[in-house]
Length: 331
Image (tube, rainbow, N blue to C red; front, side, top):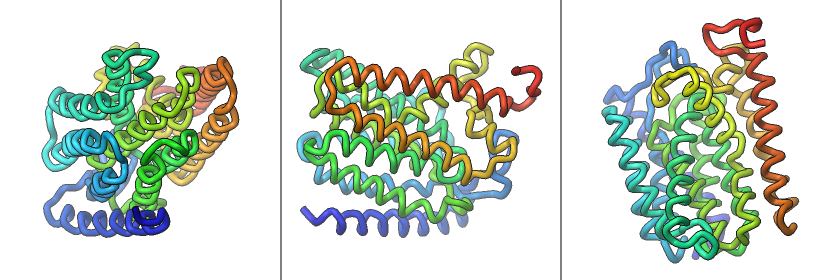
């Protein structure tokens, strides 16, 4: 195995160079996202630059140890579905089917708490975890630096939760460094977007780190895995619930996530990214603080974070109403 610093430098360089090369090709071939009422950017921007992150994760899977083939297959299916959608939009059902197939490959190799739930149920829960995070990262990939920074921080937090898990540190460093390699092209000014290939790879990578970390945690501590990605889960979950309550099409693009509303009401992309990053750093610190405590402290810490996040989301939602609403109508 190479030293971690060498892996980090190689991952950062590969991610940047692949993204830069893809940018030129995407501009030439017209794979560009144009401004619109459901988008936050104001100029046409090439998409699909996250392919470098996907390639880095695929290569880094060689150091994962047991289960690396399942990880690689699942990544190819999930990121491949995103890449195909970036090049030519896929029907939502087919896209979800490919995500599920990729998630099942990973979940079968790394079921969640099989000693407690049993392998079939543990696999089913792990599958929901993988597909859920893949879509959450896809939903919240709409502001410069947001999805990439969140994946970087979540990866490091999950690795610190289970430092003895085989291959976890290597995979986390590769993912974090690949994110750093992509960020100069996307933050603070976006010259390139992750695309679905990138957001799918990030969500899949964070989910894989969570499942590998869970293999080293006791059942009562597994709740801590929900803390590093908590801000993404809270924003995506509450927005989906609200849209479902209004009987809107859940998979249709929109600008109703809290981070989108913040930008629409005058916050900069950098400011929103920093706000969400601060939450994730605090959530990871909380997870590490209670990691050595016996139940029910891990569950209590997780519940406290999600309740606080829900209340904060509601308060900020009143300050930043949805498009078409007024401050009075949500107050």
